[in-house]
Image (cartoon, rainbow, N blue to C red; front, side, top):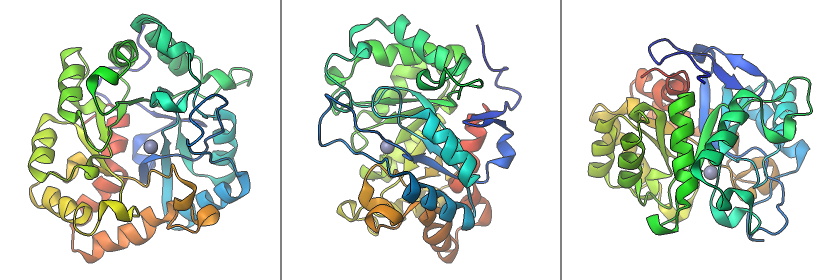
Length: 320
Ligand SMILES: [Zn+2]
């Protein structure tokens, strides 16, 4: 049961509107959240992003500034709505790539089915969202298909849902899909690389998220050498001091020849980050201010293109 051709040839990227050649993804936000519904029974402090009109404006502005694609990192059961993602994509003409997988436990109702099943059952569910479509869109004549796997680590390995982690590994091996791995401020990144590669997942299938919250340039270079992709997204989160942490980290990675191992993102999981909801920098900051600053800092054009979408596009297509 293989849904994608072998890694040697680029495969189309599966967006909510269907397959798109990876060369056409353009500027791509490697990790964001375009819709999160409230989840009865989940931690009430979890984010809710469900105001359709402002979100559509956000996407339209992103598109107007040159953004073309967004990876949506909210999986089933914790507020995802593939029907909304489909409408937002059609109305804004931005490619949205939806995910299957799982987020942190606190975003689900207690006793959600995912935490009580074996790895094979998790794998079957993830594969079915690739093959048949997202659970909540199965009534559509053309259900929306998942384009990648998202999983979440807690800050200690013992707290991570083991069957779910393993089920994601099985599904990644079968489907060849990319896995975006939420880390708690970069914790357990090394362990996750070993865990997944030991189970047959290729390094170029792994994206370690929020790694700029652990801005250890030496560690980042080691991880980059393994072949995994490092996702950075604290541009507009002052508590992580992006001027002294994130920007020097990008500089270090590019100057050491690792621009092909970095993917930039906005991670808009908080309403305050939305321009049209909370008055924040917004999704359009990626093709706007962030791209401008990369250019002003004198980074080579190729490096900018890689970090602003080229790297994640190639990995979604299954090539390095
Ligand atoms: Zn996120």
